Length: 197
Image (cartoon, rainbow, N blue to C red; front, top):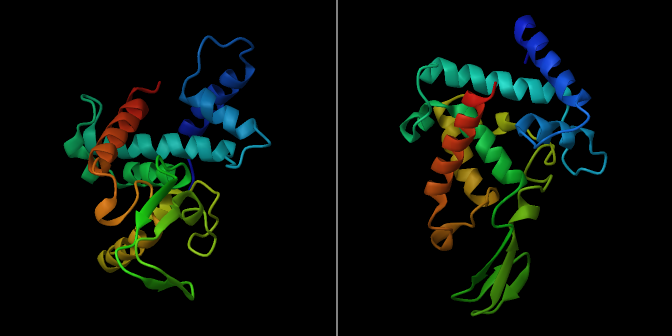
């Protein structure tokens, strides 16, 4: 994805200014991203181009859908697929519920082993959402993996997502606040991007 020359120069100047500030009086979103970029021990790697692309792509989507005269409302979220993809990818990498338990109502076979009824099963959602058998380049931040190009692809992706995308647990015992969390996160991140200057 290319960034137009004007945006690239502005963002490059802004990044350089943030990197060269010796004493900071508080962290903003750009500072956090630059800190993650510079951390050699970080499990998640981010590049300078990814930082620029994230800001430009989200800002363009938000401006084209909402304009510059008002802030995002929760009713705008269905019309902002890239913003939703960014939220989903962030939750995939850093789930709020990384491990959750389930109690089996009846015995069943799992992975070739018989598991008795009333057994408590502990699911490591964090590991499932970073499993290279399910995700291509699982440690990379790629919101595009949540963007489907056609209706049938979207339907297949939704069915598949239920099994491998577990940020709030899954099934009947999943977090009851999941929808509220998506609305809140989408709105807050969208407003942060809108107000970022």
